[in-house]
Image: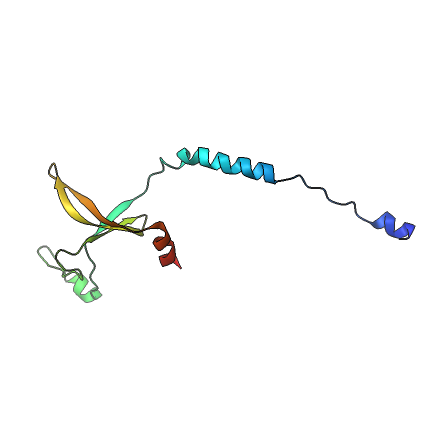
Length: 115
């Protein structure tokens, strides 16, 4: 190599070993899981749906009945932040409505449905 080429050659970059820090970061993530456990989410239940025209929507008034696409006895859908996570049935506890989960969607199935 000529002296001129050596003079214009950039110095080699040196990097620290990241493996030990990566393992520590993984352990730190496990420890800090408590941070996300208190984040509020919205849980909602869907009894059924109906598709109607705007004309029919505008004609609705007190006492109107809207037929839903779900049959009697069919389980309700349970959503968390808009994602289907379970199915269940309505129960009454101390004069309040609740839901008994009858089927919980696995995390793998939820991810498959996103694709």
